[in-house]
Length: 564
Image (cartoon, rainbow, N blue to C red):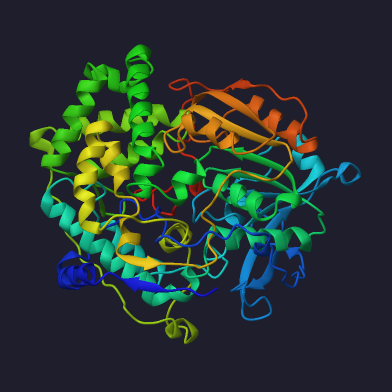
């Protein structure tokens, strides 16, 4: 694929001038974006022939992974040169537990973009309905540029990235913070270009779909069976457009309407509707807390939860608070961090209680006599090139660059970086706190224009005739429920399952939805319920229940840099 990366000179200059003083700024939304307009690759020629990789499955290396097998596939770096250079795709499988019932392989994508499939499947294990595990080899793979698959990296090593992100402004509010954030994004984007430009330029979702089709052939399946979460809805829609005759089953859990992903007005953070959805779910969180009362929601013990949260946010804007760790270090919580933590906590209904507890504790810590000053630390950024990786001076690691890559080459970026403050103000007026937070998603891709000529950007009306199952959660902060039916309407034969509840996707929260997915995957087109309840309602989770979704559903390794 012929590609180009063109920095926009005014922002490059801003970034360079501010770099020394502004490297301490972290990215609130490094996990989202999409590129300058490109011609859509919608013709049958997109079904490129390439050598089918040979998979040598071996025991996975790691404690507790005895049930899994692992392999690495070599696929073309550039599908315009299918017999040229290759890139590595890491994958793992959990073999079917009943070989006599085996239907084939089920490919998973846990979201992101930038979410690893290998480590997430290892973490979750046999998380699907037992019928699925009996009938399918369940396969997780790290998309190109992610995890163990030649990852896109923007720093020499993971520690350098962590140091860079640790001091960031999660939600810039003042003009000074906004200028700082834009400059930091400039540094980040230019660093990603410098260290991983050759990987980013082939990281489109369309290429991930082409990789998945080669993997499908490598495991011996005539057609694809696929289960995708969140960003996985974009991968599923792209595969359906490129390979309509090769679809057996597409189960999509948590949808982004693909036309908003690939184009439209505003940044991708605005087009995907996350700010509005998150603000609405946050309002539900506060109402449910008030209804649950102090016995079930600690925040209700402070009075009106809405008033308490606004008080907390106002205090944190004036003065962050530092929380000591057992090792002597401290964690700085400012306004943007609190909003980001709330956004992530709403990914699961069992996160509502811990979120309320966190806000209750922060209210106490932000009493005027208890506040502490924020310590500023610097971080260094290397500007060396790809060849340093070959010399062993640059590490491959799973980081935020993996999330940035495909989004920066998947769609349009109509704004200039200096347009973002006004956009953020408008988004905040429409969706308080979360609109501003999510509106900055994509600015890094308005600093440097990463493109991949073979990225697919529509049209999105699907030619596949295969039955499709689309699942939407009623109160989802990251993939708005109101995009569920429009996504399904792209297909000629799609059923919609509504999960009546809270959170992002259904992993581990709805036995009913798990059973419906199993029925569909076994027999696409079979009748499934139109609605399901969740197993645990907010503020009813047993004590000690974890309150977060799998990391890859968040979309990036950084809790404060969630993606879609």
